[in-house]
Image (cartoon, rainbow, N blue to C red; front, side, top):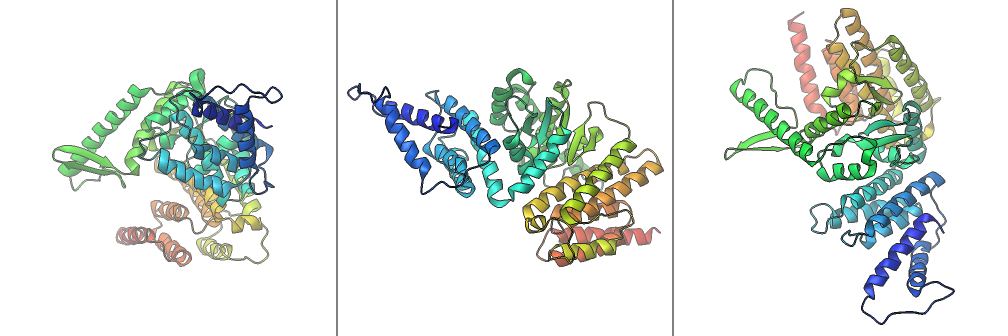
Length: 485
C-alpha cells in the first residue's frame, strides 16, 4: 500500500471515528484491524480503483503526490483544519495520472474553499493543493516531455542549497513537482515571487522552510504594502503636478484618489509589492545563491542578473558588466537548444527578412524540418521556451541602455537582438516574443525595421489586438527618427 493510499485510509478512518462519536462503542476486530480502519480501507480501495486504473504517474511524480498528500493528512490532525473530500478526490485523480480530472477538481476547490469562501482552507493545506493541482493542470495541456526538459535544464545550473524564484506556472509547479524534496531544498528551495504579497503564502513558506532561510514576517509584509502605497502616492502626485514630464505611474498600475483616499488596483501594483518582499528575501539571505525564472520583470533585479542556462543567476554584488565567458556560454547554450527544438541556428547575420520567412514556415509544416516535431505541435511548450529566451533578451536590452561605453552598448544590443530572434522563432505567435523583438529594434534606433517586423508578425496573429498600440508606437518612433536624421 503506497504512502498516499495509507494517508487516505488514515484520513478516512479518523473522519469515520468522529462521525460515529457518541454511538455505542464498536469493539469487534477482524484479524486485529479495527472496523473503522477496515471500512475506510474498503471505501478508499473502491474509490481509488475506479473504472480501471491503468495509468499511473512516473515514480518521481508519484513520490511528489504522496509527499504532499501526507503533509496535508498531518495538517488535518488539527481539529480546526478543514480538508474537504474534494481534496482527497483530487489526490486520487493525480495518483491515477488522471490529470484533467485533478485539474477540474482544483478549480472546484478554489471556488468552494479558497477564492472568497467563508470555508477557506488553511495555508498549509491550500498551497499544497495548489502545487499538485497546478502541476496536474500543466500536464493536462502540455507534453510532459518538455516539462521534464525544462526542469532538467534548470536543475543543471542550480547548486544545492540555492533559493530559486519561480515565476511562470511551469517555473513554479514543474520545479516543485520534480524536485527530490521541496521541504529539504533538494535540489533547491523553491518559491514564487508572484504570491509574496499574499500573507498566507508567506506563512506557508515559513512553515515549510522554518530555519533554513529568513522570510518576511507579518509585520514586514504590512510594511511592504505601506512602502508601496507611499511611493505610489508620490508618483501620482508627480504626474498630476508635472503633466508634461515622463509619467511615473507604471503601465497597468491603476492609481486613483477617491473621496480623498488613495485606491490602487491592477497586477502591476501587486507585482511591485511582490518585488519589495523578494528583495527583502534576497538581502536577508546572503549565505544562499539565488536563481530566478522571470514572469514579470522586477526592475531592481536587473543589475544583479546574469544568464544561467534557461534562467538567471542573481549575484549578491551587482557586476558592472557581464563577463565575456557568460555571454559566450549563453550564446552556445541557446544555439544548441534552438537547434534541438526547431532545427535551426540563428546568427547575428540572419537578417530580418530571413527571420520573418522562417517564422512563417515554423507555424506550419516546414520542409526538411530538422528539429523536434513534438515541439512544433506543443504551443504551450513553445511559449515556455520562447519566454525563457525573450526574458534573457530583456536583460541584454537593459544592459545596453545602461552601458558605460559604446562598445559595451553595441555588444549588448547584438546579444539582445539574437535572443529576440531566437525567442520569436521558438514561438512566432507569442505576444511577448513579438513585443520584446519590436522594442529591441526600436531602442536600437531601428524603428523602420520594427515596422517591417510587426507587419510580418501581424499576418501570423491577425486577431491580436494588443499589437495595435505597438504598431502605433513603432510608427511614431520611425517618424521621429526620420525627422532627426
